[in-house]
Length: 303
Image 1 (cartoon, rainbow, N blue to C red):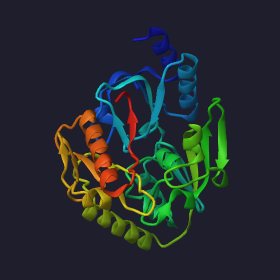
Image 2 (cartoon, rainbow, N blue to C red):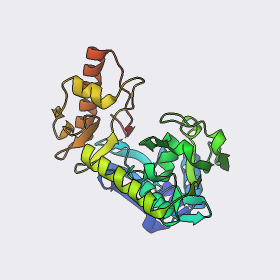
Image 3 (cartoon, one colour):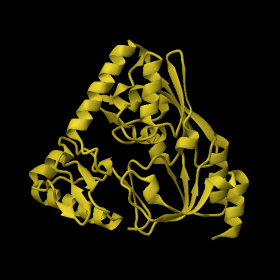
């Protein structure tokens, strides 16, 4: 342990929220990953900004995570500081036709708050298994809706350590990208603008979309959601299926038989097994169809 770094970290975040050698299996929906040297759980924008400042000043690698729903952590873990913006930073508040929420709020929690306030337009996100921060970074979307449709502004920590508010028009939101991703900004909170709706109709649409997910996606297994981005003009899952890879397996990692766009953990899979499977799937699809599959899942650690 780097004693100086540890002492500086617990000077900005209380000691009980600075964990050492924390297993990342506990913090990813894949249920995979070795230990992070330091695992921080800030409770405020200031704590998050101060923790990042310490890492930068000490020249220690750091990574920001939410609930780990789009993350594959290496079996060796992460030699640095993981800063988790999740339950400790998940406040959600509705005012008029706007929702104000911290980066760690789950999309399900934001959608529930919108429904309770009689606000329509966020139903598409209710079943996406991620946090608001990650959704802003990657312009998350489903069932015809995207974050770009509802984001009024986002508060970020920029590369110089300054807290800035960016209007929706400044975010350069595209398919699974944004200026936040391009610049390496850190999302701290966001304001969502919706429209008045009927709570019963909103609930009905959310239930309908939930049922679609349950029927089509392998939610009973640990995974990181859609494994590959959608290639232009194609669907990744259909390409993988047509390549004869339904049920293809490497150790405990498998292409879902229910939805070929998902790689699932069917039995104590390692990160190395998932990584090998993804590479073999991409190679087979490239060889058969000439289409390059780009991972949507983010890797953390050494592979």
